[in-house]
Image (cartoon, rainbow, N blue to C red; front, side, top):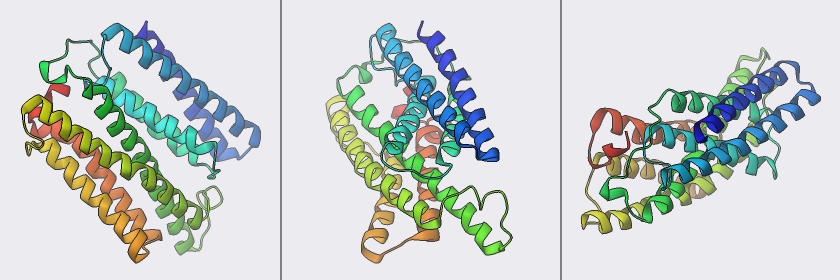
Length: 272
């Protein structure tokens, strides 16, 4: 049943992405409203899938690549939807829906079998740590999208030949504010995710820090975002430098999430 819900939500995300892209080209308000409603339905169906998967597995479904990437896509989708209720960022939904659908494709192509938890994962810290960490990654992903949109719009302005993106992307100030909003939510959650992971490590392995490759990757990611926060709020970094730093830091997020597990190994490879 849970996989059926996943398939349905996958299809609805695809429909939402296509509709958002149609709006991006046409800029017709009716198509935009339709795309938003479809994306909301996809998010609700995705939530039902995660709940059903949790019931079927008997534990929090964030223990392999299929589940983790699916939950990452869910966090991106609902991070955007929560953001959308308070702010309007022109055509942000088009880029968010595209990233969400790409993540769903990765999840769809991964091994989907439910397997028993290894002893290290049999803890109440699993839902606490994993939920906080992946929600953080979702908001940091939104910041990455905002940074990418910023560089695209800046490029249009520098060329002085206003094309497809210029008339469809928000102002540079709006995108910089978007970056700042996502950072102020995502960075504290990232910090809390590392703290809860350390407490869990103490319970599971006897030490707060093992210098495992994924722990090192998470620490490097934290320092990158900490540097960005410092530069933004003390030195006054804005615009292009902040956008580039946001993109670089998010690449570190992706490498920590997938690169370490698939290419480096370590204590956290049970999730691959």
